[in-house]
Length: 120
Image (cartoon, rainbow, N blue to C red; front, side, top):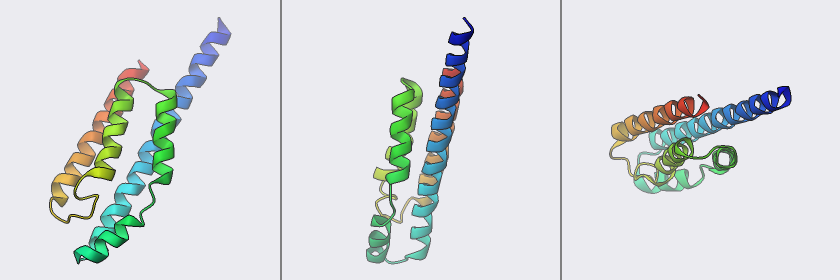
């Protein structure tokens, strides 16, 4: 019985670490994209700069979430990642910066909320 409890606690810890790492890496990506927009005023240089923002660490962190968690938290993590990778702003369109930021924080909060419920 103690073994099952210890195993469940370890799995919960791994899941918490996976989500925390994904949130950290996603936020680094968010900040990097935002910085590239601020540094590059013209569309051509902005697009080139954004193409150099590496998605690797955040993608690996997302994959780790997918390995350890199922259901709504994974869907929310994927939604956050899609927002960071596929939205017009993330693809260098300077319009809609305020909406992009608001949507980022909304989806991020939804992920945290769904993960809290998942752990209960």
